Length: 91
Image (cartoon, rainbow, N blue to C red; front, side, top):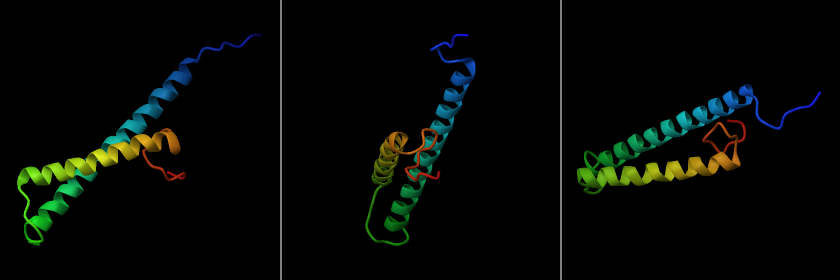
């Protein structure tokens, strides 16, 4: 009985599921990072009166934080588990 070097259908389904899990995890982290950063800048510039920032400056700062989250998540794909955007080994 010979074994094939080609992946089976079950192997392909597992890879797709793992990739989908990772993508969903990463997108959720990016969105929450953006919203949290935008809220923090808006609070600091508005009611807290720590500095002044326009709407677009707030969005830009939140966008930079979200890109940082994206880069970290992509790096985590190679460091941690393949289906998680976390660098923590247990996640």
